[in-house]
Length: 119
Ligand code: 5GP
Ligand code: ZN
Image (cartoon, rainbow, N blue to C red; front, side, top):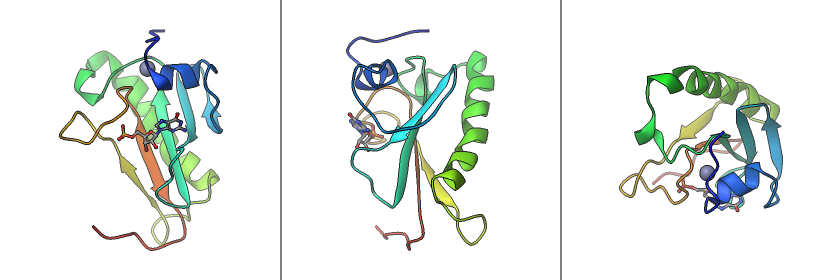
């Protein structure tokens, strides 16, 4: 499992920086965002240090498939209302133009019983 000692999310996954854990298995980790944009806002990440979606290769297809299938289950568990009245938003910022600040691949899962803020 790759680990980048300079990466804040690698440190969170390793337990070296505290986080409010939502989920963990052998290859995925989820934790509440420290600055939530909405009532439900957690980050779902592969444990392996992959800097962004731009580094994904076909060998990551199973891992990323697992991540995407897990996201709606965790969203419901965290309080998102069921589809279609409820739901959630998935955001995966990639690179500078994508607004990525932490360079360890993560998807934001954002939702909750509140109208979306526009703009
Ligand atoms: P992005 O890279 O997609 O712009 O967003 C990174 C996200 O990570 C931000 O929403 C930010 O609030 C969150 N974040 C940054 N540092 C920490 C941290 O130490 N702990 C937690 N829980 N979230 C963090
Ligand atoms: Zn990392």
